[in-house]
Image (cartoon, each protein chain N blue to C red):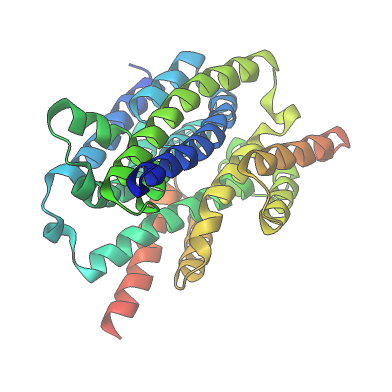
Length: 225
Length: 107
């Protein structure tokens, strides 16, 4: 086996491990979406058409709390802005045009980007990206359906602590992003702003205000120093 | 169209547009240091605000702040994250703790 072959099979192996374990998380999305008052079909359409993980949880969370469609879409889109920046990086080695570029864009998520960037040549990067993206897409959607059906079957979601599962999902998503300064300060500031405004504005609005407020303080203060 | 479908449609269009944008715009358009820093911090701020509101806001009482079974669930989640537990273990652990707390009579 040549070095290039070996690198491609390493990419395949990593893609399958990450892809299968991440796809499984779809079960928690399906259950939480249904617990937030969405139907099985709505949860499924979200996993197929949005395919963003974090923003899907955010949309369900804001809608479940009674927020307007506008604040739910804003929160979900704020979380998806990072994907634009992943695309800037993955486009360099993917060299995809036409419908393949559209497919690549849809599969551009945290995990496909991370697995691709961990590889050592462009052929392996492409293999890692497509394999991870495709495996997660299939797994995430199948498991969304399983989770949504299960969520539908168990009755009152509060009795099963599914509202706490939603908090835990957001905590698990933010956790790995807290390592570098000023992320912890930003997170604390955003949490305080969100809680400080929650009693006075409609559900969903506090998250948007918190993002704008925390960023204004952190980015502006550091930018002018 | 219901509030849910309107939101799903809007969020799906926005998500796909944001993804496609990365493949269409020249990298230098988004190369500024301040833009890079802001975009790295947006998910941190949004997720932290979501953790806070999903845990401590009482939607049934006009957005009043409250500490209930969800806070215990979140504490369990943080403890599990600290121990480097897998995503699903964190979710199931938090739900189980909140469910047990409610079974024991906590709101």
